[in-house]
Image 1 (cartoon, rainbow, N blue to C red):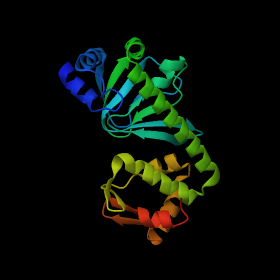
Image 2: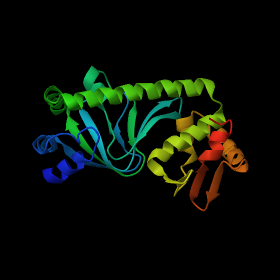
Image 3: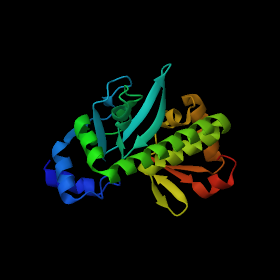
Length: 228
């Protein structure tokens, strides 16, 4: 992939979009493109952190495995990035990064990452804002696990998955292909059996509609219910 094409991709991202053309071309020259087949690890929890990654296509899942159960912390799509924490604090990777579907990433080595932050205050500030947002999201997720019942967590998991997988049609969120129950369970912190039972219950309540392979989340009804 040419540096000009990579530069054009960087222009579309929130983190790098304000860089000058010359700065984007210089950054592009330091990046390596990689294809990641579905269910392939980009890195494992505990690995040393040597690179920053930008998602170009597909979806990358950030997750933890505990006692044979997967807990999904985030699902990232095109324009999102990951891997910065270990570069900043020098500690091992805190979670797994796995391709939820076939994905394409751009990899930036650690030395180039720090050169960028040292020479561009705008990118550094944007990175700090994103880290703060992720910390707030983590606090919200902890609060949800502590205070929201399983049905509510499943609804919230569907809304979260919908950010990268669904289209909005009026007040409905439409998944062309319904998410796998294992993905919902991993994000909601529920067992597969509980997820299956509660999804049927939510459908019976009219909050969800299945049509062929698609799933529709009726967000207005969801917000009017006690499931959030």
